Amino acid sequence: MKTDPKARYQGYTFYFREGFCWNNLLNPNARLLKVKLKGESVNDVGSMSLYTTNILSNKYIVALLNSNILFDYYREFINCSVNVQINDIKQLPIIIPTKGLASSIELLADKAIKKKQESANANLESIEVETEDLIKILYSIE
Image (cartoon, rainbow, N blue to C red; front, side):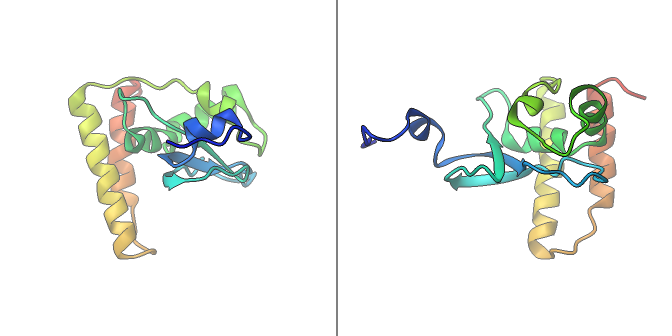
């Protein structure tokens, strides 16, 4: 890649990478973090972005971060303000699942994405319940 010596170093590493993002301000009455997949793009301060390693997929992380379990943990132990910072998200306990469980969660994420692409008003409640159930198994919560 051709680089500009005047550009900040971070630009070369993180720009134009697929990952996941969220708004830096959360509605005070929100019930979820509302994380979404992001395509290859330039980052902006209005939307915080992170990237996965080769171990876990972006879809898996997005499903976890959009769960009630991690939202409750986030609000209770990390940050109860409306500002959702990158370092806050980095503090969330992300469990590395079995391949089967990861695959099941990713399939549900794919199902949700497909439904939303077909209709912006699609009801995802059944998919959300299934995903929450798998995440409860992952975190050993009954």
